[in-house]
Length: 162
Image (cartoon, rainbow, N blue to C red):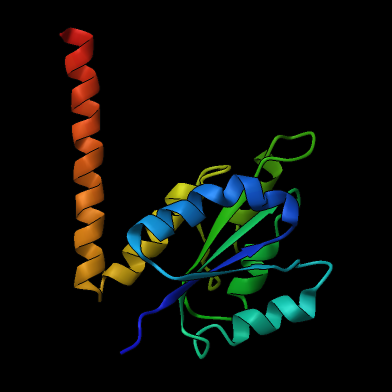
């Protein structure tokens, strides 16, 4: 069985800096990913085609980052049954709250997992955890990452209370 890839779809190139944490996290875990810039509103046919072909293209999950109206994750989820994780982006007058509500309020039957506004790292970790259900090596990498994080917090605690 070939390794599954994570699809990362950004609604705009302006989302690239905010999504760097997802790219870096997946790279650290050795999880292959492919990033695209596709819009639910400006390139709806291409976005729909990407989602419809996702399983056959070897994707195990899709991360979708979008701001403002933030219909991207839902538009992709409507065309595939692989997990879609929405990352609401900060933008506009509402600083991402509009994107959060647009992403999280999906109708019954079309689920989208949603992380915090700008939660690129958690989106990558959730996507990796989905793949790790059937990938023991990746599960071990995630366990090791959690242990490193635990130790880092305890070291900070020790310095504080030194």
